[in-house]
Image (spheres, rainbow over the protein chains, first blue to last red):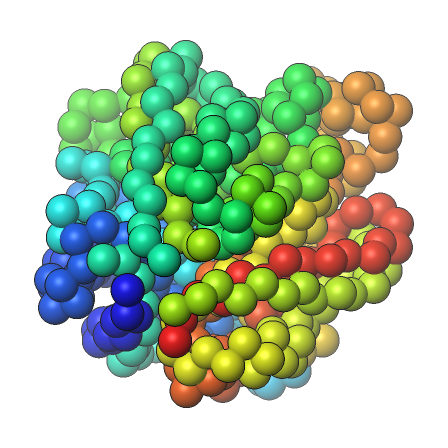
Length: 145
Length: 145
Length: 145
């Protein structure tokens, strides 16, 4: 049972851009020749996250509106003031780091019959929270037989 | 080191029903014969999530009350209005999708000495956020030796 | 492809202490001799969590201030009252359990060329949400070749 390493390359608009990576993941699994096992995907960067959702425009917009409420680009007034991360680097993406830490930078998806075993209305998504367009290379590790 | 695939089948009441799946996971591991490795569990559906907690009625109630505050069934007034997902499908489970995306649809648990290595006061739980009772088949992938 | 099991031992101050475990993880991978694969880390306890962030004092403080807002040590007034977990055990760490369940107790990191494939400004961190100093033994499972 060898390990198969692959990469999903994507361009994003940043600012909460939600990308359906299920087709690219399916292609990685097909290339690996693995029928049953797992595919582990990671975001090697601290302003992006991996999760699943029903990938339709309404749900995607809901995710961004939810995170705008819970983890806004500017924290809610005193006593919180600005994000401390901004003071460290004179940066503007403190909320992007926080959103990525909460949603999580990894996901492991089961493989059955050579395909990712996701629900009918469920997609594996990468969300780019950074405040500018980014090119991302997501490492994929496939283990199985 | 072969891959062992299994399934945890559960009935839930939906609406934040928290199920302790640790006994079922232990049984999957026992069936696999694996002593050391990992067990990866997934929810193949976008309205359920996997995490760990101390499975006692107080903590379970706290999880649901927290999510009712942070990700309510109806978003908090203007300018947010209703969840956009509801407009797409005339559906009522927009909050269920959001909660699942934030809590996360996968978990990987270490196996040691043929058992899941969880804490004494820690259980692996599946939470069903959908707005109706559901039957769920959670794929389990066990890799180890 | 054998499985390598290891442990990361750390002392924490609790109360949201964020520990960069990337160096310890790198050492586990070095010891395993694995060049390509995955490292799966788990918190065997329900008041700690694993995630990634840019490990600098500002971002670390932002994480704790965010969680103080979203999941405070005392829930926000009626109708919520106190955490039910406190009534079960006359305990004071209900918020610690909730934070751990939301952030998540596991992370799987890709291994490439014998090292964890993290971003330049990204570290793997353990956050101890418990309300007292703790000694933690985090199981690490490395699979690869």
